[in-house]
Length: 95
Image (cartoon, rainbow, N blue to C red; front, side, top):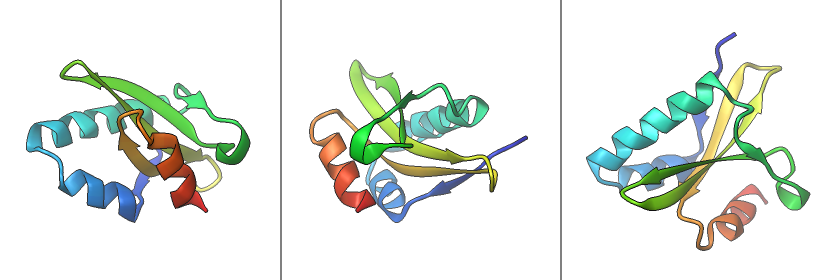
């Protein structure tokens, strides 16, 4: 079973603004998530069902939020960024 990644408009917009090296690292991390979609930490409360994958890039911790849908074999990529304001932005986007 292979999941198809579907990026949100927010994810695409933010990715375009990043440096090429970071974009490549982000693509590698998305591939990791596609290999094991249940590896990320599942959130509770308003973000129930959303998972967060953590990775480091140049000594900075980044978070990648996604939601696997096994019924439709899709992986929804919501957003990524550093911890500061990440969950507020994600919650605001999902409303």
